[in-house]
Image (cartoon, rainbow, N blue to C red):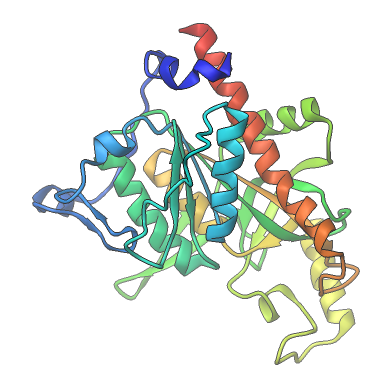
Length: 315
């Protein structure tokens, strides 16, 4: 039973150990690596003791959503502690929030590429310093759909940029570096299968367009500035749809690129809150939107539960 998971998990044998890689020789010369935006460090905290057992990391935009996720997964895995308020591990800073229960870590990343990139640098280093192995990382969040019913969950196949190309561009030392944005195909299929078994909501696999902006960058007509027409918007979104884009958000490209570089098995699971072909603003009720926002955590929670059960049976 999952109620015994906390004690049994430590003796699970994971068949092939896959480490979290950093590609920075300068880290080897540092006596103390300060993870400033987490308010953690290698000298001030025993990272292997705190995080060495982590196997699943879930990241999402808001601190509230990620605390809600850790409460949900704790209940799903029968690890909840009625006396615990699940303290924020990053309480020493207001930049990000971090929560942990058993082998699951839940971290907020803020909004947009710069915010999640900063978080991922420090998260990847944390997992590396903690000597974590066989880690799966999943971004859960919300998005705008293209031609999908609101409430549909999209598991990303590839993250594409605003020109529909599967790449992430980073300017380093004044030069543009292009990185791959492929995500783990087998993980996406496993998540899709979990959704079929749940049979609670529609889930699809498709490309996700990652933009630098919520308004003009996503062809919205309701920003402070707009120099294009409704027809221009529809033409653009239909071109995106023809390129296999199912939804639009603002973090998946750098998430995919950085996870691939570090050897992390990664997925992006986002619910669509509206069909962008039919409008720009959210008109659904608070209760309906809240229900939609629970769907990624329900799916990912089911996936984690299934994986841990399978590993316990093999141990």
